[in-house]
Image (cartoon, rainbow, N blue to C red; front, side):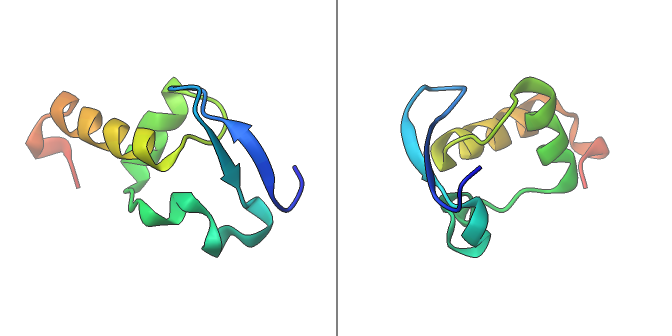
Length: 71
């Protein structure tokens, strides 16, 4: 992947700029995920999601996993 690449979110199909070469400036850095939330997203989608879908998947994970099992 190039330093900056326009990609399509595999979940919503919206395009966004992925900055894997400058990860600290990438849109995904606005979403804070636990290791478990990252695994949940990776189990459902390959590739980068847009920040909005990452937030939605985070909420979906929270509602799908019993509170006692979340960290």
